[in-house]
Amino acid sequence: MILTENPANPILRLTDLAAVAEIARSRDIILVVDSTMATPVATRPILLGADLVVHSLTKYMNGHGDALGGSVSGSKNLIEEIRKQGGVYLGAAMSATNAWLIMRGIDTLFPRVNAMSRTALEVANFLSQHPKVTKVVYPGLESHPQHELAKRQMDVFGGMITFQTDEPENMCSQLAKRLQVVHYAVSLGHQRSIVCMLSTDELNNSTWGLQGEKLEEYKKWAGEGLFRLSIGLESSADIISDLDQALRG
Ligand SMILES: Cc1ncc(COP(=O)(O)O)c(C=O)c1O
Image (cartoon, rainbow, N blue to C red; front, side, top):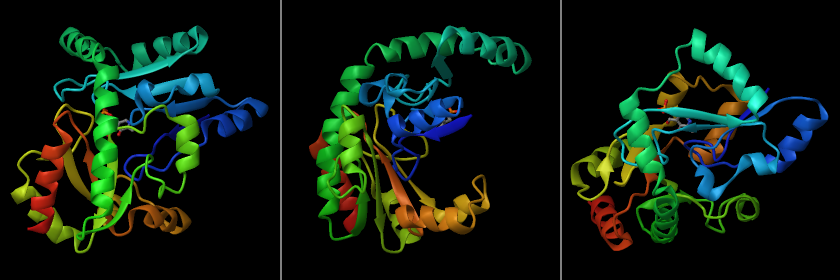
């Protein structure tokens, strides 16, 4: 099985899904795509050749930060296998309340992600010119190293932006104290804008354990640490003025 997360959280590096699907098909390997960050509004991996698509429903699908869930989509044969194994032995069954909240959230997925993508492009352009910001990564910016792939593979560029600043630890406390519209918290894909700092060292020492070449590749995208900004449904003017005052300190 090949498992890819596209775009990758938090660095927003893309995988060329059609190209990887061709490799997988030629070797009879199942291709699984975690498409949480893209959402089906931006990218539909099965049309590009993926066998299974995984979503954290907790994020954009539910969209309001008040329910946990996950989904796997794909052909009936594969899903039946997963139901038999995962459903029975891992207890992967959602509560009725979570299912109800997520179903309600999904009804507004398309207008939410379209609006968030429009706002995100404005905010990414604003951050790119901000004196306190040293780097911005957003698939919709021409400066994204895979912008051409993004244009091929994404109908909209999504609501996730990452950016870097000098002295990220200090900036982290400054943002947490000063932000008023944007919420300083973990998670993403909610109606409210959320930002949090992810330090490369911390990620490396905890769940990720990146080493050697993988760590160097990660650092190329994330430096010593980055801010992951999940754009919500507030007006772009409110988000921009809040980020501006908080970054300037
Ligand atoms: C791309 C991606 N997949 C899966 C997950 C896991 O989601 P959950 O919190 O619903 O278990 C996350 C959480 O951050 C994520 O970003």
